[in-house]
Length: 290
Image 1: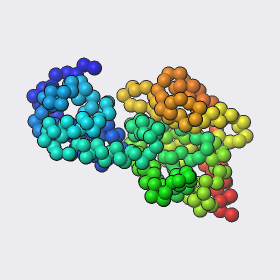
Image 2: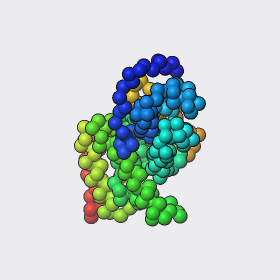
Image 3: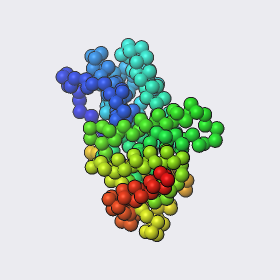
Image 4: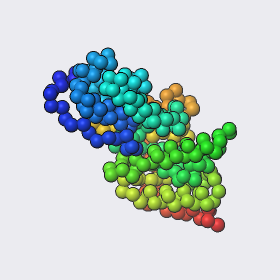
């Protein structure tokens, strides 16, 4: 990557993003690093020399294209006389993400940055559309999970959903298997609350919710659930593959993307329309109210 030489008049530091849940860890850390570097009067070249990092590498970290490490954060803290400011920030960001399964964490940045998310879910309501009680029923079911651990995981899942409440949320295209509507994850009150939430979400102009009915006889979805993230700035799509039979859970390989695009289109072609899907959800709710 070629990085243009720095000028004497760098742009002013941007506002802090530490508490913004819509921005990825890489971007939040990079923005804070750049803010403190400029405040200390350091150019990228000067800081790079102090911490033994090239300008291109430092630029990639500041722009959120490269993941920071605690060792790097410590070197910057020392060079800029920040105490433990950046190491503390990175530690807090890492601990927040640690509440999610390790194999899921690489997906978080793609989910947060996506312009659109295309979801096929064969077994349960997708995490981005789960109510707190529904999520708690799922996350507390693993043997050995303590109540405290379950609550931490529920809080992390609810935090993920805040991307849907930002000023310009990603387009969310969801297809659910009809079995999701009939699977008793929890008691009637929890299920009824979850369906009410789905109906409300389905009315959003930026959320498309469809149901693949049993009558479609479509078995492609039995291969497993998945989500495809369409990323900005011409970046290639990335997929999260929820399947025990797949080697990778997060992939941007051309073969995988072609395969998933075919599966998603074939599944969605057999799904009910948005209005028909919402009507089916309303009809299914009667099971949970009688």
